Amino acid sequence: MTDVSSDLALLEVLQQGGTPLNHGSMYILLHRRLEETRILTYVWQYVNSYPVTAMKYGINTLAKESYGGKSDIAVAGPNVGSNLGIITQFSGTVGAATAASKLGVPGIAFSGSSGEQTAWSAPLEDYMTIYADLSTTVTQALVSSGKPYLPSNTWLNINYPKVENSSCSSTSDFKFVLSRIYPGVPFITDGDVQTCGNGGRLPTERDVGGTKGCYASISVGVADSKGDAGVAKQTIVRDKLKSILSCLPD
Image 1 (cartoon, one colour):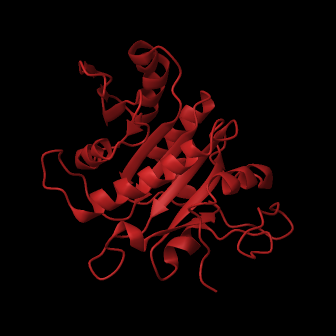
Image 2 (cartoon, one colour):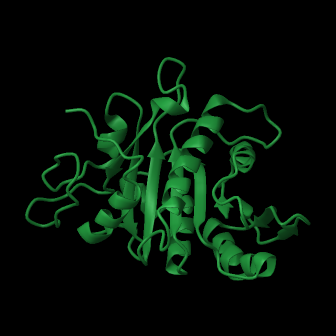
């Protein structure tokens, strides 16, 4: 199920690309009031509500009614605008993903720097297709790794840099880098998973996004606090997504 925040055109591209799961999947469009519109094909489910409310309703009610069981995975986004650091505490997209994880459904929050709120009928722009393709890549890699897709009470925060004509203009330009949400504090913050010769400390999402090139950050978070997960959970995610992960340049 997908929380697209407010960008309907991005949802259309995601649906065309068959993400996140092209079997038994639902796409949820969010508005302000709780008002459900049912579509007979059970591919599209529109819920007018706040992100967390809609996500919970989708998992607790619509999923059971539509395909008689628990959701496999919950995808929130791609949000228009990045969700980095302390902003994650107030983000509706992150709130939806963490709400899913608290209900036992692995949650992923996708956000991108490019774009603006767009009607579903507006012409598609390059960033929409690129962000949708990248989100499909991550979701499919996670699904291909097998269940459980994520450790319990865990979510992923993924942020894409801007799509521009001069750079980052195609899906193949982008690389994924494992990151952390908040900076690590020496002697206070526990170490991170070992990868890319990092000495046990991952770059922050802002570090990744600020590096020249087309680097997308993937952070592993704890749903209850929306903060960084420990090394054990980071290691599991690193191993599950190793086929798509890259390193920042020296």
